[in-house]
Image (tube, rainbow, N blue to C red; front, side, top):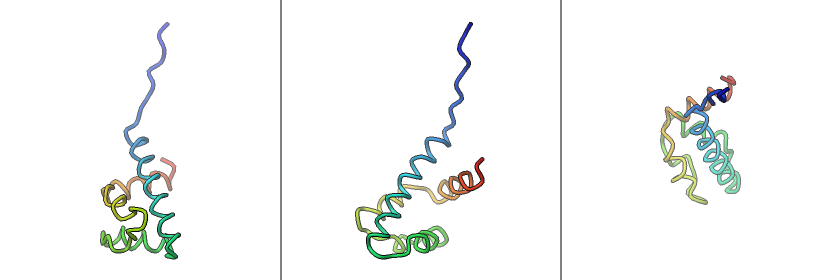
Length: 81
């Protein structure tokens, strides 16, 4: 009898990469004394990278993530879908 085929979702891997980047950016913003949630919301709404500190390479990291992919990952995780 053959093994069942494992289902792999590209979203799972991409979402995990986005999660790791967001956690690093969050930590950098917090270390610099910013309100990370407010700064990230400002960045997401405007796509203006100046909302994100350059501390620990956070600005470079966040720019690696496409804003549409970021929003999709956030919604998928928030809605558990």
